[in-house]
Image (cartoon, rainbow, N blue to C red; front, side):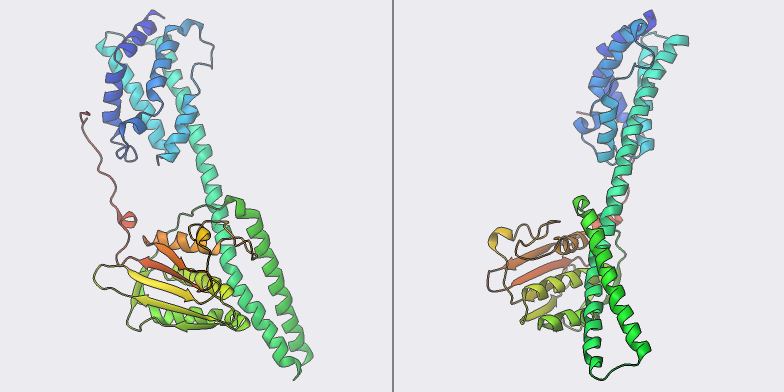
Length: 387
């Protein structure tokens, strides 16, 4: 094991130089190009020192216990840094090559058991890092799946409420006139299944609320007239407004168009309208919009004359699971609004005075957000000196 001790001495003497060469080559990986030096290094300076220590005591090292635990933490960190599994494997193999190059410069030739020992050290580290990375990736996929399910379930509540109330009105209106037996049976089936769907949606929400954070959303933009969309949303939600005796007014100018994901924008407006109607029973809700022109973002707002929001809750209303203690609900509607607006590259704010209603305003950029069409970072093809 004399060869390994010679290599360990060279590693300790030139650790910083090895790291410099390693960083220059690793920056060719797309996810590494944007990282600063401390983030890119992560645990590797300490891990290289551990490698040297293990090489010194190679003859005493227990088989299968040659790799420290730091690659586990490194795998988790690289997932947070946006690496993929191939990049995690590559950065360790690049470091392996750098160590072999170092040995050659010092006249240390690795062969037989010496080479197998060094390779096992690296292979164990790669295995631990990949295992941790894959576990984090699996948890993230499950989290996003649960979030998506909960968000969709929440957005089903508004159309289900409309169906339920419309069914109730039908039963009231035809009750006095009477229906034949078959139509009466169909109406009862409709009412019963609507209640079952509402119960199922409630169960999904209850089971997924603890997993809700921000949801990565894919945007599919197109250009469309805003006024007709708003009018359709108002018509769809009208039964709820009628039940609350709330007047909903479309004040969006006819000539305004939007460049957005129509389905997500519809859900944003449904949630804002539903929220406004809840807090303005017997009152008035207005949807408006303004196009400043040029490249300035489109501005849309939903204004009500209801109870208003206390000042100490204004900064919290868009947080997932933030609920009004005076009302039932899971606190998802406004969190969904924030998520979908920000996915477009826009911003949403609320202005309110208790007793004077609230106004929710959000913006939609005229052009796609930079993050949606950003080119991949340039890949370095030659080592670059660092300060």
